[in-house]
Length: 153
Image (tube, rainbow, N blue to C red; front, side, top):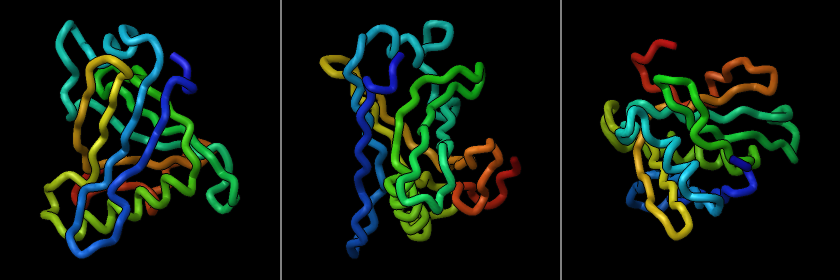
């Protein structure tokens, strides 16, 4: 499945008086069935709790043109469900909004939402509290990641 089939928009970055959950809105415009199949395990839909969201930089974060790859993966099998090229600037803005939103909700509440729309097909929505950010060398960048208190990695 090609990354070019995916388009990402981030929503909910406004810092208005009423907090809104930030959203990673993904549009998929490739062949439907391969993506639909990736979100099934044993014929059943993968639960939101079994989907990991991560972002791996491809250049240092300080680089103004830095990009990276946003990945959705199956926590049980480790399989990638989707990979999307994203600028570091867009992800930093999204993470900032998710942290700000997190300050307005209980510690146990989700911090962001992911919407996946398949062109002319089904859609999938789930919420999460964790988004791990990795340096281009593969090491975890804890200070940039969304890791709720009490979660051990």
